[in-house]
Image 1 (tube, one colour):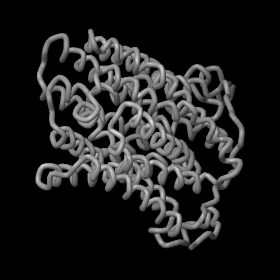
Image 2 (cartoon, rainbow, N blue to C red):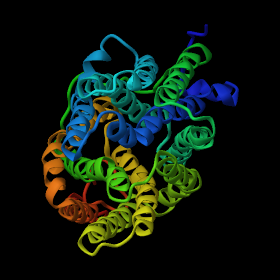
Image 3 (tube, rainbow, N blue to C red):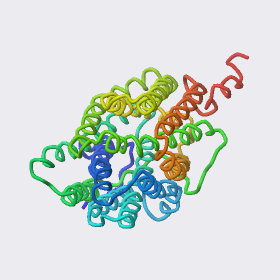
Length: 412
């Protein structure tokens, strides 16, 4: 077992497969093997095995998001564990409780396994964001994160491909699929522990909660994005099952196509962010999302068909690849020692709406589902307004266009 500590600046001497970028990609493959499988089967599983309605699924997603809301606690866990170690342990936890999902087909059974798997998922995602921004240079980060997103989509693609190929042909049970996916996630995490050395970032991270006034625009983007994204995650796939009656293999096929498209588009998105900057990428993303959610509302108000719903589902995932810009925007404006604590705090901010919205929106869904998507379109429009405040060249001291204009000009 290799437990050698290697500074990031010296990691280039390692074989390519043992470098920090390779570890980030390997972990990015492991997480969606479990989480994407859980999401692909969830809506059919809760309807067929646990008799859920819109309110029940809303409450379940509230429970799923509670660990994300408490992500700031990661800061205190890091007093005792290295970030890299915590990321691997979180993946093991995610895999283990994903595997157990189908063993407890009841409301409270699903609540328990969902919360524990979610602790693993959200703590991994928190640390993963921090490690990306610490281990990748500002110049290479957009494109490299694009490749990491692509690797994660590959993991999901493998999971979905196996579900489609085997669900009908082999008559697999929910239990078999959940155990296979969760077990694969945990196995990859354990392999990463043995195969990779400890990597040491160039700047030691603060081990306390940090909120800085000059990061306010980043916090606002994260907050609104969490509310908007949660509406899509909870209700878009549920609509496919409840309104259009799509079966497991059809839902999985749609998600498979999403991830196949993301494998191709995410590296392109990274190059676009690197070339044209975070401001333009965010404007394109949020303008596109406003349109997507407005058209989703139209599906209910004007009774448009399933093909439009499926096309919008794919388009949303492609636009989400541009969220790379939000990460690299913060990397450029932040104190390097703030990456880990701010990643934890930003996940908590992101999940304030995620914890509070699904249950009341689940009740609204029972009577006016189109209104739920109209609300999401409004939130995307707010994000677009915030994106217009991002400078063309963000940096410390020039976090917003308002602050940039207030700074003394060269030669003044």
